[in-house]
Image 1 (cartoon, rainbow, N blue to C red):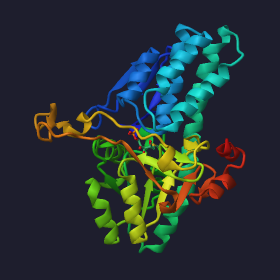
Image 2 (tube, rainbow, N blue to C red):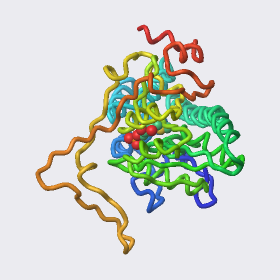
Image 3 (tube, rainbow, N blue to C red):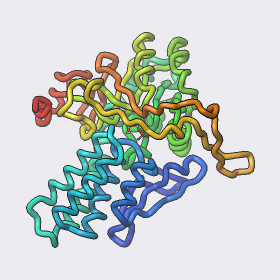
Image 4 (cartoon, rainbow, N blue to C red):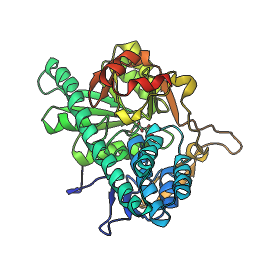
Length: 369
Ligand code: MRU
């Protein structure tokens, strides 16, 4: 997507042919800064400290993290060490393990001298596939927005509510939940996006609003608790959110608060869609509530808030009383029964074992292992 007239992807190999450039998302929306990763430990830090975040981008960064490790030592033991280091950074997004396993599998039985090149080729393929997947999700989701627009008086916008950031910043490009929005906007369909602020880290207010604004998409940031009110008053035509891990039965883990939006959508007859790239499907799991690990992050993400002061300086302030405990659950699970449909790169599936298996017959069997 474009940043100040320049096309950008969230991750790329620098001109030196090996080091990796990322956008430091902890600086947005107030500063656009890039960071160069040269060591696997730096890639692991970038994921853990959320310089990069969003399931697909976490996977892509981890893949390049393995490449960086291989440059230092291409032995089997070193690969396993780097795999463990990177896999341990964040527990919920399954793309992390998927990408690491895929790169490691690409190296199996290769002589050491060929491993670095093979790893970079695999990481690049993961990135290219992510872009193609998101474009396909965009095309399938676009049909939903076109259908709603056709039923509305001419010129009235399609109101989409989204949670967290499942935009291009969370992927290599396009985003998952945002791809249909960008495509509709580019085709002249009026779209307005309700952007949940997404406490505690404010990925909606800081990242989704930033990228929609840069693309010229009309949007309004709302506090996390507003969505139910908007839906009760007919101000949301559909919800589209992303996911960090979806089980073979269609249960969806996504940023904390997604479940509450799905409940409100159900109660108000608002369609609730999840944009789901296939690498985010965990075919080995069925019951999301019981089986998906939910990340708990440092309580300071909740007790402290950062922002730009009137003088332009970034400040952090404390919002809770001294001595109060804070719990920071980063994700929740929305049961399949609350999901209207899963927008995948192969089409829109009902959120069910049968629905996913019909679109992905080549992969569905692994759920029974
Ligand atoms: O903690 P984050 O910012 O990595 O969480 C991101 C989300 O929950 C996204 O909605 C999800 O990864 C889908 S991104 C296409």
